[in-house]
Image 1 (tube, helix red, strand yellow):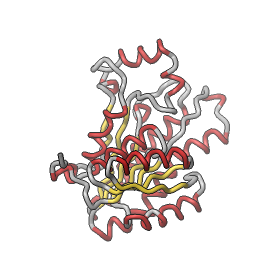
Image 2 (cartoon, helix red, strand yellow):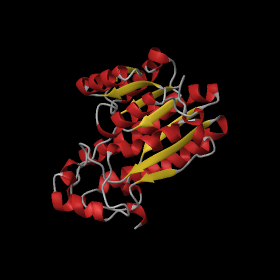
Image 3 (tube, rainbow, N blue to C red):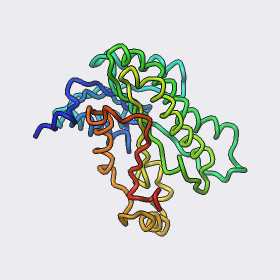
Length: 255
């Protein structure tokens, strides 16, 4: 069954970073299912190829763009190359990220720089590179991935929390800069989902259960829970929504 027109992404092009696994891959799949042609960007070619194959086998459109997003020269080159597959991206999803879990006093210069580079600088510079073409068309979507740690401090998360607090504010700044030109910027803040980044928590059964009990719904997230929010924020359904952080966390952040 075709998606309702208000959620239809047919004819749109999405660039999704971190698309080789986890949240990025799930969102890329959802956007492709809604009709978008998707450019899958990450460092790991094998994961990207699996994601591309799955989308194509489901009769979607996808291409692979291998890039080290921490390298500014590669980042800008990748932004330019992203337009060579299906045309200039209308939708940017910044899902690539890392989390180096250490006590605050043990965080090194290299730790801090690595986390802030991929989690905060990359979304800034990619949007800066892609927004002009969106503005030229009078329509675009920037979707950043925020976090519970955008608003809450958790143990061992100083650099990650700082980066995700920054993402919330960056999203508002992008909305202020671009929305009058038809380019909306919003963020999705996931709760606890089973991904590579959350493996240390997932593998601690007691802690994972405690997180589930901290939600209103009574369970942790499944990746499929993010699909609707992503399509909503990428589609005409969100035309009058910008500068917002949408928490998809089962009510965790409201407790």
